Image (spheres, helix red, strand yellow):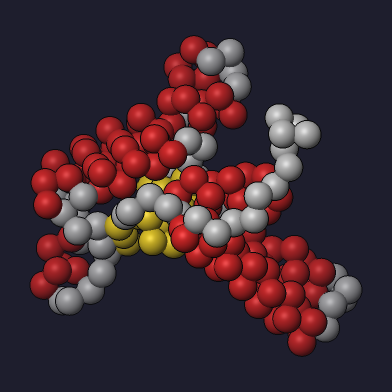
Amino acid sequence: MSDWAAANDRALIVELLVPASPADLTALGGAAASYDATLRPEHTVQVIEYLQDHGVTPALWEVEGLDRPGDALAVAAVAKRGGRTADCIVLGRHANHDHHLDHWLKVAAPVPGFTGFAIGRSIWWDALHAHLHHRSTVGGTRRRIASIYSDFVRYFLDARDGTLPVQDTPETL
């Protein structure tokens, strides 16, 4: 596929999902959230290296959200390993806006090599659900989806540029 994409002037995008194995979950006492924070980032780097070593050369790696800046740096670095030009974008996994997505975007956006996000369901799911259950008009649904998308774009750009407003956290109160 990589060869075909290059020969036909097409950009290949690889959506990389790295779920926990049963052994991973056993080692972490069954905690999927612990897997996401501790093992998944390292596994993501290993899978990208493996795929690159076997000829996969996408223009974009879609990677699941990362909790720590060091993990985002490691993933972006491996995407560009050996002079490759691939960038990364954050996948949303239908996570909620207020916690996971904002955090993942805030972590990834300032990292060179992370250029955007692919968080479709997080943008349109609730609005479409409301419309399909006759709680929203077509126009209202469009406006809601456009507003949510615009909010994420602004947040990503502000995180990238270091202009996010300071938020009080329990540690700073």
